[in-house]
Length: 124
Image (cartoon, rainbow, N blue to C red; front, side, top):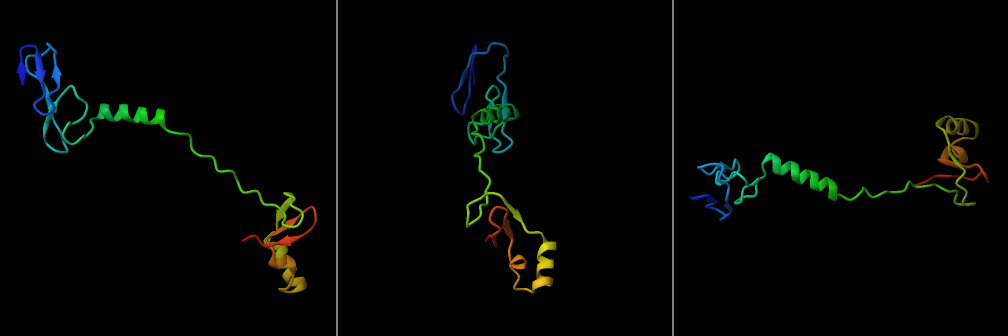
């Protein structure tokens, strides 16, 4: 509706005293096909956002987002001496242990070896 220098939105009642144009500019929402005042960046009925409104909201959300929670890496330690000085047993070492001592070889059945105390174990 247009009353002198003031434009009223028929849906929300928003008043715009913009004397620049004789005819109020209404846009049609592509989502719900209802008219809304052109100076508003989103549809009052369904909340559909126009591009400028989406850009503003994206900028605001980027400013308000929390930093990603840091998850510390798992540090494996020897179950006997609690040393972090460990190494993974290679497939070659496991194969040589199985060939040399059979499948009952501790090296063939283990995944890690402590460099401090020499203990070998499997991490589940």
